[in-house]
Length: 271
Image (spheres, rainbow, N blue to C red):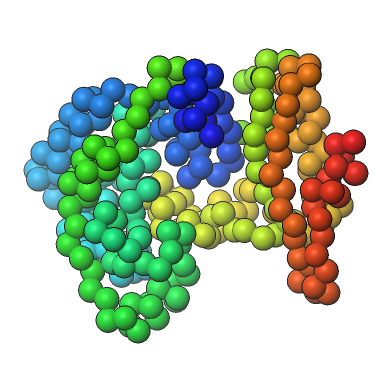
């Protein structure tokens, strides 16, 4: 959404508490020149050859997914890329996160059934059932191919935040023309655990990330959360402008009842 806004000549502003979503947004909100990205990848390639990188002591769950060479390259890049302070490094990091695991040669891992991270036990079983062998993939070559295939650079630069949406201090009152967002659902998706492999590259733990994100099955708590969110949305939104909230239905695990969550949030909070 942020990239599309910038491509349309609007200033795209993104926010997410999840560090993975934040890095991806950061990369698309301020796209560097292609030649700078290419040069950085080649410099990193040269440096990797001169640096001794070991996989000793690495998480066994990560070791079972990647070939030793590929993993050594990932460990090296994990240490070298300063994505928090460099838009070039943020862009390269985002490309790595997008190609870490999948089921084709464009990915770094052995063949995986999904682009979100299955549990380690599921992966072990999947590897055994399909007699999978970890392919020897060169991370630097994959990054160059990805760059050639997907690069787009908007003229307009955007902005990304890693804040609690209920307190967006960086945005002035009545400064935003359009808000498009998909709030967290009530205990449906564990955004951290479902991306534990990518979060490993960012030095994060999936379970710990989930603890920091808003997560509840209580409609009352969810409604209170959304009321505070909508108050902040009202503060930053220009008068007469639009907000689009994508809110899916949820099913109660105890009684099987399906709740129209959007209707509930409208009645309890928005109206």
